[in-house]
Length: 497
Image 1 (tube, rainbow, N blue to C red):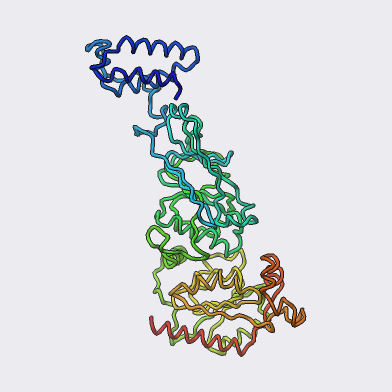
Image 2 (spheres, one colour; image 1 turned 120 degrees about the horizontal axis):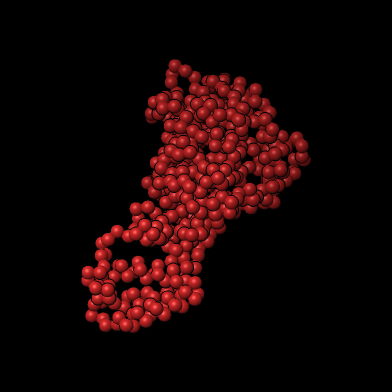
């Protein structure tokens, strides 16, 4: 607030008390302030300070100035006054008499993700990659030029520079003056949730652990009353996961570079970024209503089952049929070199075997229908094992762990699977003799003898040796023993249920 504006405000306040006798002084201050204001071009600003303030004070001082019968404070304002002092002109929303309480805070405590919360008058501006929060009136904008800005990349791998390189950065900016905010063209009554589908999306594991599970954690409690705004939007991604997205939001998705670019959308609240607990896991202690991974799986069920009501254990082992084993068939690396023999051993034990070869174009609903109806789900460590989240209660998840991938297998799949009460987890860690590397390198080579020394060189070296250039040939007697154990687990689960 400038000195002139402070003088004007003081002059108006001077006669709020009828006992004060300062009318001549009042008039002198007002005239001087207006004269100087005219010279400096801010007279209108002074009037806007003085008149609204005066009308809220004790009306006695006005009557003492111009006479009891010469003022009608209840009279309707003129059209010009109504326009000039309308709520919109002063930065208020329709039917409001004061600005909304505004909030802009960011939680950067997680090593995985940043999340910012904005509450108040929020508007989006695609061209500048900015989301604005207006938290004042035109007067406060001129009086307090202090602003607040945050930068954020709304993707849950903030420590991973390679992933974050494909995630756009947004500015979150608090404005004191609504005149600088974009004019609303579409106004929403529910919050916005802003996140990115950049990063590693397109890899099923990252689709779920980086986006879909965090999206559930962040939005499920809103019961669909939220608008998703997607940064780095990939249309194929929202088509593939549309059934899941529609369980979490009752509104059309907005592309930050498309719909937001053509119209300014305004919201009462915005969440920018997604909350993250652990890979493929929901920690109920960290959710608002104690939601769990079971709630996530129930949401998947609603998304893919077309509303058909099925028994929660419909696909458990029945004496009248053989248990079903789904085997994931990889094509480029980490391939089963003796897949035909693996199928034969499984059938010998008593399984009906379905071999699945999913790719990026395989519909999620198709995968859900097959895996949600199996008793055993088995595959070599890789993104396709993320489908274990589709398993029905009582099923068994078998992960085949290649050389050098123990840490990744434990962290990304074993850990969340073993915490799920509804399924059983088995692991088949291969021996050096079962790896294709055994025929390519000397038997005392570090690739075979000491995989941890290779892991110590970093992820890129691990990926090059063990992820991209290794296949497996399982030892059949050993595999048969594991299949028998899986069958026993199915029997024990079916007896309990």
